[in-house]
Length: 105
Image 1: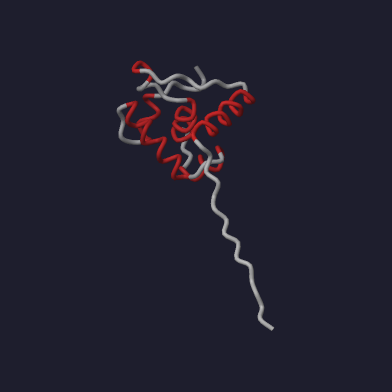
Image 2: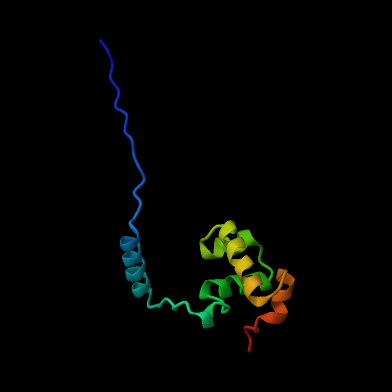
């Protein structure tokens, strides 16, 4: 008797951009937050995520520690910190203390 086996091919489901935008919009509304519009004037402003990551880095947390707190990968933390450094015109996390306002102000 020949045995037959079934091979299942599972392709990842990729959301279409309009569907993804719609889902993101619903999730954002559920949190009560709003997405800010990108304009020429806001390109050098830190996003909420960048601000949060920059403050945690300023306070001495490592990328893996920041990632664990925010449920993101250390690589994503590194990506955001690169953007923070560029926007704030700094080259090191040691400089964050002088360019970020204190949380106690």
